[in-house]
Length: 324
Ligand code: ADP
Ligand code: MG
Image (cartoon, rainbow, N blue to C red):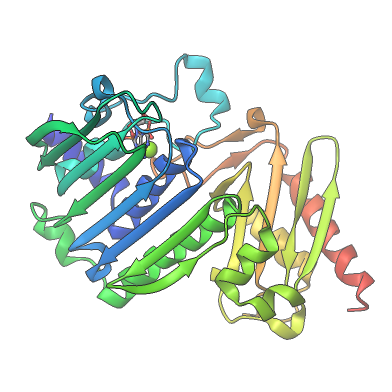
């Protein structure tokens, strides 16, 4: 029901950037290799996301907008080893309950009809067949049109756009094999090559010169594999927002692990000076719990202290080799 969807939306969809995150994660889960994002007025007027992924079959289109209808979890056990980015089946119904949403989708099977569905405030307005163009385009207009309180508490357009840009950057860093583009009111803000090269992806986001000067590090123990790139201390930033933590391809936030990264870098000595860094961690999905919060950004990790130690040591020893 629409009210339940709006309540869920209150948790999952805080701002336009949350919509962008959920829709891009869906495109990633659909195995897209190209994801194009267009926003107008920082996403409040319009957010359009096109992907070349699996698409949705005609018989599943309406189901996708039902609460807890996810195609990604089949058994209860799956919850403990979630690999896909989405799994709660809340994003689409939540977004459709607080905006005007048009879904155009077709599967990779060229003989199958595509679908067009328009839902506004949880009500289906248009439902029809569409050309069989493989992939999915979702257009979200007039976000928060029926939740004025939410609209009122948004930050400035500039801050909301920065939040969109930030989340797209992190998603692009987590998926170097996907070509991402982001446009805002016809201004291109990001384009990644999608060739699988992390350093080039870092270059597309933080500048090619910066990326070339960053140091690659690696480390491994029985449970964890860590790797990534970190800038040298002469290339510091005044904010933590240039630090990205990626676990099994998922951009996450974790205080202890971020602290370990900074400790390896030695930034206890340099208060408020942070590196540009991308830290990738691979671990057995059984060691991570992503179902801590609806936005799935905070994660809980078993053996966290050992992982923190490995991160600190890998970065510290690698930077020591550079005589720093
Ligand atoms: P979840 O991602 O948690 O499964 P969502 O509400 O985000 O829930 O999406 C519901 C369902 O719609 C997904 O499980 C998936 O089957 C389908 N879906 C959504 N977006 C896409 C997309 N871009 N490409 C293919 N299928 C999609
Ligand atoms: Mg989803």
